[in-house]
Amino acid sequence: MKRRHFSSVLALAISLLTLLTLSDALSIHAESGTVTLLRVPQGGIQPQAVMDERGALHLIYFTGDPAAGDVFYVRREPGQTGFSSPLRVNSQPGSAIATGTVRGAQMSLGKNGRVHVAWNGSHESELHGHGVSAPMLYARLDDSGKAFEAQRNLMQFSGGLDGGGSVAADATGNVYVVWHGRGEKQGESHRRVWVTRSTDDGKTFTREAAAYSEETGACGCCGMRAFADQSGDLYLLYRAATEMINRGMFLLVSRDHGKSFRGLSLDQWRLTTCPMSTVAITLDDRVKNPLAAWENDGQVSYASLDSSLAQKVQPIAAPGESRKRKHPAIAANARGETLLVWTEGTGWKRGGSISWQLFDHKGQSVGESGSAPGIAVWSFAAVVADRDGRFTVIY
Image (cartoon, rainbow, N blue to C red; front, side, top):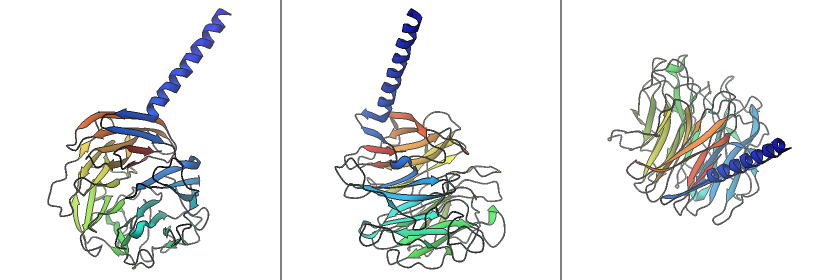
């Protein structure tokens, strides 16, 4: 009886310790700010989040069969704790894909706060890309703000969609949907980045055109990211595949609304296979420059980007040694603090955990860091900076 009583007490103590540890992980406080963890509604995966100027949180996420599921949109108004009722983004059920982590939906806020979403179409999609390619799908929130318009396939000329596409919008009505796909020749080293543009807030789009004349290649199973800053400059970040082995990150910048681009290699990574990586870009409000985060050889870093490409990019790595870090997310607050978030231990059909580190305006880690279990298969985290300087990590 004594042994049984001792075992019960020990089990209770372990349970209490687990609860305390989980409680500590859910909200970490420090003088420099607060990091709060928030689970995705409906048990969803692959969150993408944007905080608008009013302080409203916009969120999209994936649910259902990873090979043929749905994307939903919710919004949390300033001062509220709950989200709005979910709106399905894709008009055809099952026409989105999450398999591989890199092909999910991305979101941008445009003129008058309109929500724009782009995603790789699934094999169930009734719309098809060029030839037998998967489609590059797009939908925007309608004028009422209560539903999304019917999805459209914007891939009319190119083909070979594999890694994920992206979308960017600015406050004047420019919208860009981008992806990498097949070039004039076969192989990753000949893949191109393609851009289709809208000047009427997503009502109509041009036929896609190659963004860059030089052959950088594009790593087939890696995601990419588009971002439009407050001045209207457009940034495209993707993994190159020059000669099939040079797979460093490559930056394209347009200062004429996507009509022409200049390019810059951000780092080097010699690798014969695709690492299936994703990238993130956000705005640094303090200096009005974008911040980008990406992976290199199992480590994640972030750096400030310059649209003139005149300054050397100097990546700042997450502290500590690791070769299992992937899928970074990044946010910056008005004080110049940056929160870098990433996954640990994720892989093909394998979930993992998230970790985060806060940096000051000089790029120095300031001690606020943490980790939490619970990243589902094919998922990652998103992060936003609240108006009061706090950060919310959604996973």
